[in-house]
Structure formats: C-alpha cells, structure tokens
Length: 124
Image 1 (cartoon, rainbow, N blue to C red):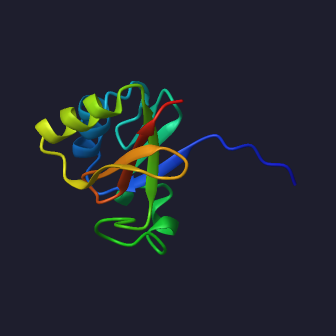
Image 2 (cartoon, rainbow, N blue to C red):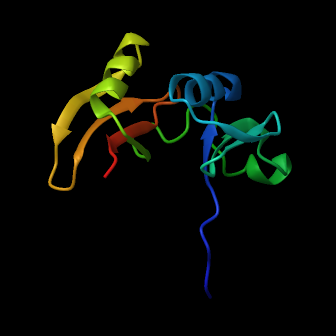
C-alpha cells in the first residue's frame, strides 16, 4: 500500500471559535468553508466534532467535549518568530512557553481554543 498525506483534520468543540483563531489570530487563509468543516490553504483542516458524518457511526467513537487536549501538536513556521510571539501575546493567546532554542530550531508553543498545542518555529 502506498498512501499520500492530504489533510490533517482536528475535531473541534466550536467550529466558529476555532475558525476565528486559525483565520484571524494565526492568519491562515481558508480554501473551503463547509460550515462544519473548514480547510485552510495549507491543507490543515478543522471539523466540528459532533458534526462528523455519518453521525450514527461516528458518535460511537468520537468522545463528547474537547478533543486532543495536551496530546496533539500542530506545527507552523514563522518568518519573524519574535514578532509572531509578541502578536499572539498581545491577543492574549494562552502561552505554554516563550521562545526556546532546541537542537533543531527556535520555537514557542501556545494553546488553541480546544487545547491543542500550537508550535510555531522559525522558518529556515
């Protein structure tokens, strides 16, 4: 079997709050908006957890409430890491930690509205 990665889809508690976070706060551009599923131009997507179809099947395995809190990391890159960090702090985005130097790059982490970890690193 040979597979090709197309999208990463996060199940979110409130699609409108998450849409505003990723579009307005992080600056992602929307490619498709199907109301219960939004695909951004970089092929990252969010889906209303309780709207996952077909509901009669998915409700047997999709847990109610917040999904993936603290165990999923979404990675983005910034051309100006210091500016990105400052802008998110000004917007009162919950910060996990400030900019740190790891062996592979400089980065910082914040939480999205559902508690997913958003990691923002320095573009090379």
